[in-house]
Image (cartoon, rainbow, N blue to C red):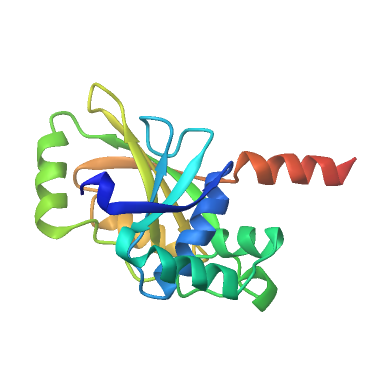
Length: 182
């Protein structure tokens, strides 16, 4: 994608805010993505939501036409697509999945991913991932309201790797929870 064909609808200090805006725009059928000021996906201090330049006015109009509070932004960003928000009774949880490749399995893992995709069951959302330089471990961030969906996904890959699944929260959520306890 040539970056000059895309325009920013806004810059956000937290990725979760950018994800919420991305969700609103994608929900209206606009192609969009998040760019950051860091070379590593997910890291950075500024997250920009970008849309095709030809659709910038439509995106801005959509965002101006339906103002969203900070609480609603967080709720939108944390809810998996098609899932209820916490206010509606459901709650998506973030999970860090540590995938440890079987010896020599990395090439087959990438071949399978290319030919079959991620093989995610409906209701399980892939957020982002990082692979160590030795191609031994992959750290995948997933989101779902149903933990059992991760086990379903793992079954598709268990011949090539071992998995550890850890429920996690964003740093902002952790800080808010700690502040609320005091």
